[in-house]
Image (cartoon, rainbow, N blue to C red; front, side, top):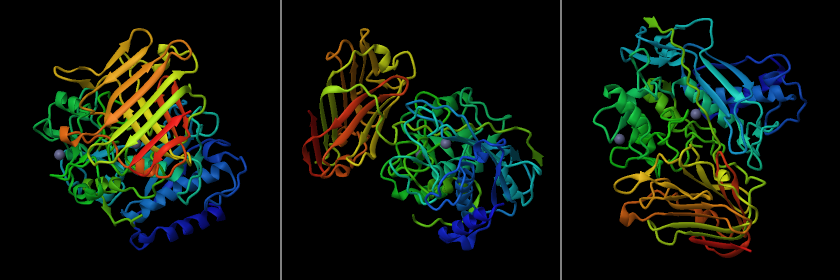
Amino acid sequence: MSRALVRLLLLAALVVPSVSGAAATITILDNDGAGEGFNDPAVVAPVGGNPGTTLGAQRLNAIQYAANIYGALLTSPVAIEVKATFDSLPCSTMGAVLGQAGAHTTARDFVGAPVAGTWYAIALANSLAGLDLDPGVADIDASFNKDVGFGCALATSLYLGLDGNPPGGSIDLVTVALHELTHGLGFFTLVNLTTGAKSGGFDDIFMSFLEDHSLPNQWPAMTSGQRVASAKNDAGTLHWTGANVVASGVFLHAGRDTGTGHVQMYAPATLSASSVSHLDSALIPNEIMEPAYAGPQHNPGLGLEVLRDEGWTASTPPTTTSTSTTTSTSTTTLIATCSPTALGGCVTPAKTVMLVKETSPGNEKLKVVMKQLTSSVAQSQFGDPVGGTSQYNLCLYDDTGALIADLNVAKAGASCGTPPVSCWKAISTLGYKYGDKATTAEGVAKIVAKGGDPLKGKVIFKAANSLALGQANLPTGIAAQLLNDTQATVQIVVDDGGCFGQTVTNVKKADGLLFKALEP
Ligand SMILES: [Zn+2]
Ligand SMILES: [Zn+2]
């Protein structure tokens, strides 16, 4: 261990106030080969309190720093080891898997197990048993994307500083590592979400806190078919019911059932690698355990409360007999839906109108109309939301370039009206349109995406809340974030297609309640 790393560990202790309760040792083990990943010898300057002098050393420092944050929060008599690598993971202009992690194995019916016949992540099982049930191997496997900022198409980079202050929309690695460590410590279900089957026929401790208001039972008592349906129930009724999350979630403005305090889990209509084993992306304010990176956070937030519900002993963070041979394959992904900074190379319209109206609570509107797309646009540039799995995101950036809103509309799965029909339809061979009067997906009511010859195409995106109609899906506070802004950038991004948008500079109103701007 280098002197620099020792200093870093002391620094970490100083900046985590609850260090007096520090009672878990979490060690990151470098599992990369010579000269790559954590051993990349490229010389770098110290950044944001990270004293490493090589790229590899800085990466390791940042991940260990995140481990130390958890080490100060959790109590465990058994040391926790994390086998980690920096590898190539999926990446495109639209997003990247920033990291993935899972428990190396799980255990049930060990001495001290609080609930019989139930799988626990091995680090938690060790902690509860008071001994290492699976000695000689690491407890968590984690990998991080080494291509972000180094040749992958996503227009961002990883920030390796330790101060939670990433510049220019870069992605904070400490935050990513905290997210991934939370998975490895137990934030995952072993249920096969395609078949609904339990792992080896046994419950896991995570699923024992899942319920769905549209179905009569908690997850353990559901049929496999019911679990499959619940995993894809986009109605916001898949909930975490654990007492610690319920008691701690009162600060949420959205994503929490106000009657019970249950908190929504991520269950998009189209199953993804992130389904169920994340908090819902509808939560406001954003939580670190949502599926997509949403800015630097050095506090695991409700992620820690989930771990506490499962049986971890933990302190409160500062405000800011059969050991299984089953190997967890929790390949959890963290996908940046809207890029933290506006994408380059999008198709630009000749005319844009952008309106955010939040003058009356519960009756908010968001409208973006982009006309006369300046280049020829093929239908494929709008992906395929009818037969495929395309997702549309409206990404708004303020006049400093910071991402302030990310509205997502998933593939067709969403069905609209009575009787229900797909919300998406093709517009001949020119594009697609989406209509949902109930505005179930983040308040989005209408999308028109139509291509064709130069100056013929258009993209329209409308979202709304009407509390009178029982709708409260549009994230609010966007106009407030644009108060006195001199410009804004709006982009419609299709995850497997193109992007469309521009910066609007002709601001008509920006009083915090209404933002209206045009281009030209
Ligand atoms: Zn509930
Ligand atoms: Zn995740």
